[in-house]
Image (tube, rainbow, N blue to C red; front, side, top):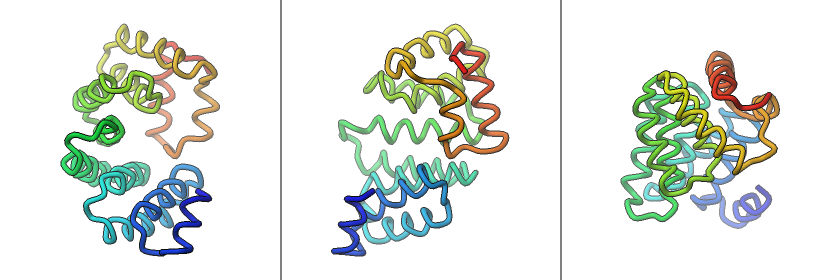
Length: 184
């Protein structure tokens, strides 16, 4: 956050700095309105910056706008088809589909992200919740073990206090993570 703010002090139209600052405002501060304004500026300034589209997808999802979240994550993927870090965009697309209640698609994209980075814990959480939603509890439990291997200190209640998810969405994810065997 400090680096993005320093970059913006030098150039207030720098797309990457706007995208990072917007994501931090969304994820850490849960200020979705302020984050959205920064992310819209990032998209206008750098319309070909995949990370800006991916972060904008994330914030759209936090705001409950799953359809826009899907479109933005898809755009990030189209802009970076050979990106070795495409698992981030795939994970955002999985999250967007989960928010929309499209659990099969959430699993599909979550597994794509998993193939590139099996230790990306935010992807694992969405994948686990989607698998439980589909009644695939054995696979969810196996991924829950992988999550704990990647993040040994993970606790549902601690994560729930930090995550930008709110309301029924958060309640559903928490219940599904518990059902998969993750500790409170």
